[in-house]
Length: 139
Image 1 (cartoon, rainbow, N blue to C red):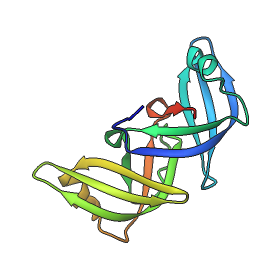
Image 2: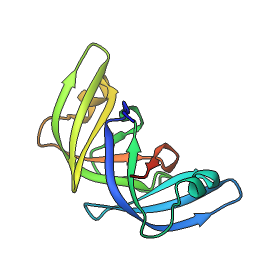
Image 3: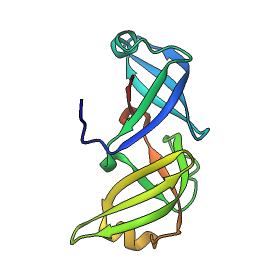
């Protein structure tokens, strides 16, 4: 299956916290960072998600927010520090490619936001991703 989702980070499931409808699945990425994905309990069963399972964390580039430092007092727990590799700007939007430990991420944000944050190659950034915006795929 081919996907248009550019952001694919490999990892291993460390915990699954089931709920009535949704489960919180903690994944240790290849680079050592932990992220949490909120997926349906049906998906947990269908994908056989359990500790030790190999997965890819998938995130659409439009769902990756950026900050110039870690953000405190926010509900977004998935915060991956990295460095800007490339910024491609258009009239309205900017595509920002980021290197994080263990891979790369692309974020699509408004051009004005990229300018306000002063994003340029070499800039330190933190990618912010809500757990509900991370999908999981198994090999």
